[in-house]
Image (cartoon, rainbow, N blue to C red; front, side):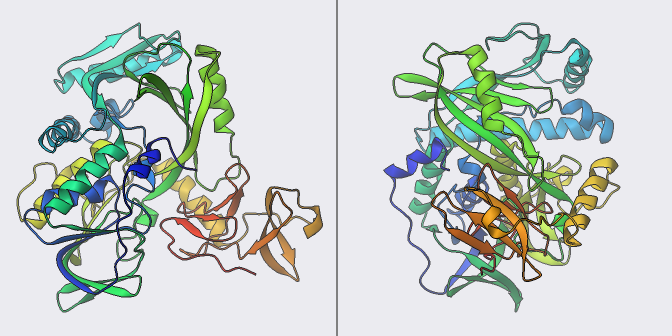
Length: 496
């Protein structure tokens, strides 16, 4: 389902797909905010091309909340305890600079993207969770973050026990910003190709050969900006993170809304912000995330609607969609060199649901790497870091889940025959002793696929809410008829 933001595409022409071989300085794979920001930084200095398999910002960047904030939930107390005070201060500083950098670009390029300065809040309704909020505020105070306060009242119409406020944050329309970046890239003679799917990357004669559609792009530098890496080795990022899916809905609340951006501390958390839509204000609510491919899918749409209607009883649902994000096991993005043995190949992934500022941080670090400049924040986001996983429980749970699926013991194969599958339902059944993923459409058509992920062979799970096949190991997604729609897999399922 398209997001509210993706309606902006109606105002822009499709970029052409690649139709000939090319030689460039920098090839960026992925046209989300990370890829566009990196290309923007480099396009007035080097020959740059972006290869996007769908439309620019067609995945996570087009489904984000559009919050521009350094307040990444209750996070800085965790960083101080798991890393160090200096580490946490550098992380905060990098994201604060990203906020200012985005504002500066919007002003310089005169991008009309509904930018609004807002305060950002993390709040709790539970007295038992108040100590966590207060500890986070103490942690932020240690980092000498200006204009941050502990407050007991917020404008969001709900009762709270307490909240942390970060002032001088912002929100915008991510697609309008993205097309503003694209315009500047083209003005600088950079190239953007849509509907251009990368199928392979090879190292030849100190350069990279990127295979896209039926053509080759030869580049000195390659940037993997695909949210989840489309290369498995030697980076092995599939062992260092997992994918999480969130629900999002836009409402017309039928009354005046609030100032500020909000996210609850409780798990699962819920995020709120307003959207300027002509003469009216809309409400965006996002939350109820789940690990992609897990069996117990909660109906996040219904839950979000219940929460919003408690605040705004007459609210009308206008849009709904889901968004997928990569979660690193230590909660810090991987930014920089893809592997210590692959020179001039860079990666940005694991943004942990805070992709707007993280994409800017990533673009600036990778730009400096390519231009051979020092970047003071490079070390804290180092993508090739090897250290003990501090979140051992989460690491163990992830590997158990992946192991179950790879061993194909995740499902108890149902005994129902094909005719017993309900309309609009998908299941894995046995047909002639072969496991087959079957979906019965609303019109009674039968779609049969091999329910094995084309990434690393995990057995898939059918999401009956979204009507898609999901991989529990690394988050690949496929349509009910087998088309690949989310990385890391870029191959369709086998169909019967």
